[in-house]
Image 1 (cartoon, one colour):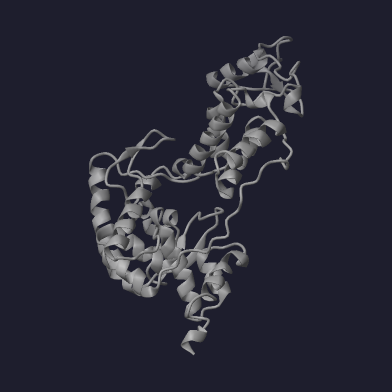
Image 2: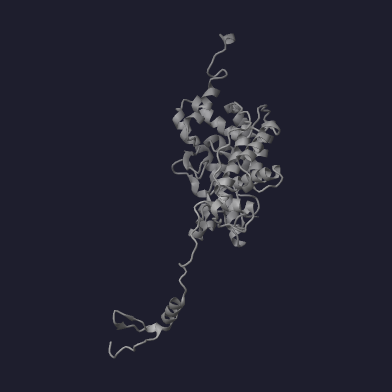
Length: 377
């Protein structure tokens, strides 16, 4: 390199294997910074394995319910689950005169759950929901392992059969509806979707070529395929043309975004405005997303369909209690009546266990379709 190196060269001109380096100003500045930087690995306390021995939560300084929201969103639970869990946790704290949960354990949990069953007369599913919310609080927010409470008054689990419409009743109710609620109800009955699965359908989930609907992130966060009735295709095509006009209008107004799951909005910044990701059944107006605080067009509210179905059932003079889920029950029952095997029905419904689907065989075993009355012999 030529010339002798000084006995004490300045810090930016360190030598590497006896050679003098020629460094530009940004690198010199960076090296000076690194040389003068203190060693941050010294005297760093090692966090304790257990929270009771001093480990701090990354959400330190936040309110308890805000910590619950952070933990739920980290696990990708739905917003509805987040609100439900927070409400049960709030009721649990108020029941014990606003004591902090970290100062309570199994006995207090048992007292609260027994109160729900003995005094509030809640259903077994409601009591289990409250238990799930409280256990989530201790295990995933407070980082305290709680034994599963066993000494509690259990709510009686009802053994009710699902309400099933006949094919004529289902068609009569649908016939008394019109517009978008009618189209949604046809999907519930024709494809066996849950109401939330129907409302969350996006344009990309409709596979017209293969006559199938792709249900994304259903119950249990599982995807599945179900049938797309041929009779629905013309109505769906016309409906999507209308939805596309709404989307184009939103884009011109500077909006047009929809919610994307699992941080896809960060991975694909433009996807939220793409046509493929838009909801098939959007809300009538834009609203502020409670998580991102962005103005978006969410999917339609479930109450819109629920009210429309109740009104149509009255007009059709159907005396059975009819809800959106009734059409899913009817879908499964009518498939079994038509001779399809139970495994096929299980796959279409998205049941993990065939025992869940077996309930529809009990429906088949009652009434004149399976057993002939001796009076008619």
